[in-house]
Image (cartoon, rainbow, N blue to C red; front, side, top):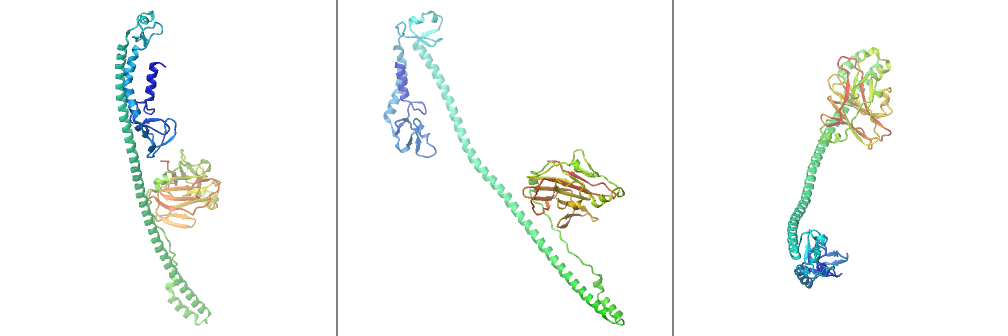
Length: 466
């Protein structure tokens, strides 16, 4: 091995394989390898004392590290001697061709030359200078590059520190933000829970008041029935009397029970109040579907708009309708969409319509089927306006009286067998029948009834998807 190789080999022995620099405060570990203490500490994972050797991957314990002072001294000496050894090599190298000392340097070819080599034709026009001058020039250049690299290193270290600092800030901010989000949702949960409790309390109070009215109604009707039964007995007794006594007793019986004869039975009814549910529509709108009407399913007496969003009743005089149409008294159109899974929501504008029905039905339903035959095949809500301008919502269980509304929302959860109807304007629940198991595809269902009186014809408009 030549001198230069020996110098490089010495440097390699005195260099840490982690930082690639001369040893600083070196330690020798159990496997025999040596590293800078700080470099080895950086290899620790977390706060664990167990470290894996970067050279042989052997497991070592922090407590078994042995400081190597001799290696530190040797490293310091080698670091100082290396520049002098490399400089002295100028006087040690000899030209293999001419046996002369190589004291010159060719910048074009970047090789050392002896005097004879510098006079050769291949180097005649090259810039050749003394080797020590070339080394000095090279040293200045390297020093300049070293300074640039060191400044860049400092910038990169500064950037690394900044990134690490921002990383910590990000972790802290993430935790704080998560806690803030949790806190905000807790406020909403608590608000909705309180609203739900208030809603249920009001409903419970209304139920008690309504049941009390029914009990009072039952007592009054029972008393009236008993009075009627007593009167019937009196009448039966008079019927059994002699003809001479009957007219006199009948007059007394009628006078005593005149008020009872004029009484009419009164049946108590009930209407539960509704209250808006905070955020209800925002949740429902996340399931909104772009529903359009199916022209093939529409009654011939319905006119559909070009965008298939509106169905309008075409007024026809009653004398031009056949008996079956008058009996059905309703015209049906279905939505083009079919549902066999998932959750879906759409809204329908009722406007000034006086008689309508919306909901869902089995796909097998056709416009030729009468309304009465569809009860088992649909879940729908029907509304109409009475003379006092109130809207009556007719359900399978009965009917409830409500003020007219402008827009109805329909929600379908096929998997749960759940259908619900909403007053969109007031964000209140109108009706939700008990859940059932759906079988087969379902379609949106709409119908209008015959109107022969004066006024604008009825219509339904499906609201566009927002």
